[in-house]
Amino acid sequence: MDFAKVSVEVRNESGKGSARRARAAGKVPGILYGHKEPPVTLIVDPLVLVKSLDKERKRNTVFTLAVGSDKSVTAMIRDVQLDPLSRRIIHVDFIRVSMDEEVKVTVPLHLVGNPVGVVNGGNLHQGMHAVPLAAKPDAIPTKLELNVGSLEIGQALHASDLKLGAGVRVLLDPKAALASVVLPRAEKTEEAAAAAPAEGAAAAPAEGAAAPAAGAAAPAAAGGDKAAAGAKKEEKGGEKKTK
Image 1 (tube, rainbow, N blue to C red):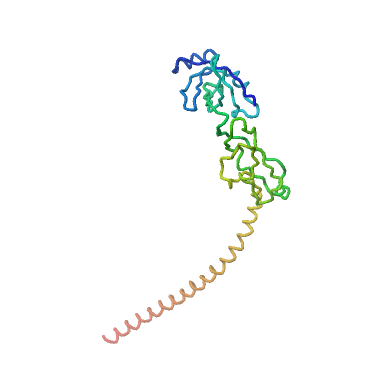
Image 2: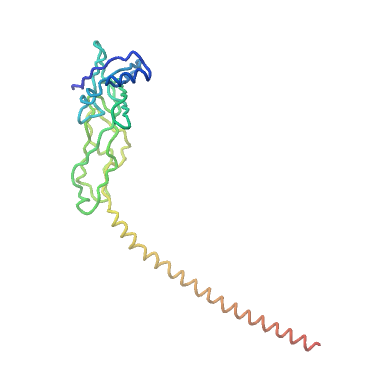
């Protein structure tokens, strides 16, 4: 496998002043580290770097860095800093990689096919648009495809359903859902509304039963008041007779 070749210069000076001078000259400061080797500060041409990126792999491009005139290093981009206004590269981090060791990358996920459930009125939901993988540098896929044509409403495809090449493994729980077909929200709302009257009807008798009990208590209270008034009259009458 041929890797993108980029020539870089070793930056002997460090600090913000050195970085500013590199940018003023149209170059970008950077650093190369990894594999327990001392970090090396670099200067790279940003235009050459962007042109060297694989159009499909992009950040997963594997580079052969020509460090000076007598050394080449296999590396990948670990981080890129951009100017918030101009969006130009202002710093780049490279990490050394070995052809015999896995690297962790994120690869875009593309769904293919028209699900049966969508034909029957469902909606396709994509749970993830990029998948974390571990793979050797020459085995990193440009993208992953997942055929969703057989999905029916209520069904899903998971990380375990991915078809990966040799030397590639997914860094997800096998049960992680990647795509599913669900009912439209409008139908869910209609089903909830249809269930609401049934719940109200079940509650109505209980409320009606409570009303008579309250009504029955009122006459009893009224009768009690009349009896109390009669007792007072008798007491007054008794007092008059006594006198």
